[in-house]
Amino acid sequence: MGEGERYQEFEPPAALRPFVRTIWTYAAPAPEPVVQRIAPDGCPELILDIGAPYEEQGDDGVFRLQPQALFAGQMTRPLALRPVGPVELVAVRFEPDGARDWLGRPVAEATDRRLDMTARLARVLAPAGDPAAQVEVMARVLEDHLRRDLWKLDPGVRAEIESAAADRPCADRSPAEQRALQRRFRDRVGVPPRILRSIFRFRRVFDHAADPGPEALGWLEAGLEAGYFDQPQLARDFRRFLGCTATEWARDQAGLARSLASQSYKPGPLSPH
Image (cartoon, rainbow, N blue to C red; front, side):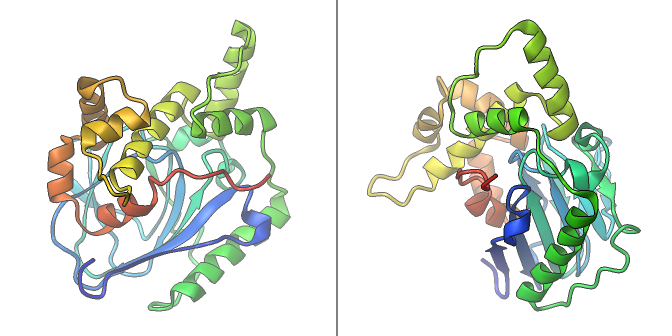
């Protein structure tokens, strides 16, 4: 990391664990002024900027300032950001199906979008320079909402997510059952089950590539361990999810993108029910 840069993850309170994977903070007093590529990780996020918000590249190639608070839905394509000043933020990483009741509408409406939450979080004050206090503030906001609106999960959707995360085969379903699951996934996750499986597989590549064992794996070997058939298939997903080759990403990764890659792509069990 650069001088003064920090990335920390915090366990959510017990009441939030079925819905929230982690709460994380990031700060970079002097971020590298370069474009940072963020890949999908299968989890929507609620982000509150305490410092200068990032600029996000739109489909037209133009960079525009993000809102101070935002909900980032599921991603199916890369996100390009660049810092414009000192960065400090606190973020809630939901489970893939954990944000539906916070958002209050189908999560598919936020897929590949960043929704402005500035008005909704206008009274939320997270102190600069104090990661633990920032996490406490965000946790309190979510706990209050959970108690008021009685958040819930769909057991069938959660079971399919757990199967995908563990790289287990899909359960046998009739066409009608599969269509019903697709509708519920759209509502609670935001992407179809097959897309989520592709995202999880891509995420596993980074875990294998970063394995500190005695024999470090190259990208192709890491891809094969993650479940890819060959190099062309892996290369297509790098283009699909990061917009570049593996070599380009390894060379150019910086700041927030580097920190997220070292943490977010590590597979692990879902939070307890």
